[in-house]
Structure formats: C-alpha cells, structure tokens
Image (cartoon, rainbow, N blue to C red; front, side, top):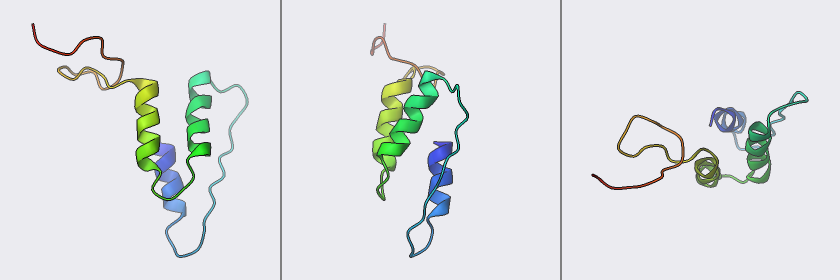
Length: 78
C-alpha cells in the first residue's frame, strides 16, 4: 500500500504523471509479485483492484482475533 500511495502522490494535477520505481536485484518472490501487481494496474482508480490482489497474497487475517494478515482456516464460533 505504501508504494501505491507514493505513486498516487506523483499524479496530482491535470497533466499525466509517471512514477518510476528503481528496484535492486535480488528482491524476494513476494516483493516481485507485489511490484508486478503495481505494474499491471496503472489506470486511475486502480486502488481497489490492487487491494484485492494484496488480499489474495497476504490473506484476510483472523476475523475474530488480532492478526491482520494470513489465511483464514475457518469462520465461526465454538
């Protein structure tokens, strides 16, 4: 989300803006996936699509607990 926010700060006028991200070699597979998501969602208003892809990668977390990411194994109460 931080990269998407930085990208959004660039384009705040009536002229088309560009955001170039310089990535060092050897980034993790997870970082590579996140960068690819940003690369493929470049249209205005892409935030929702990016958030959904991030949800797929990280998981929703524990709905009834404190964890903010991770995949939910079961929903319900005992």
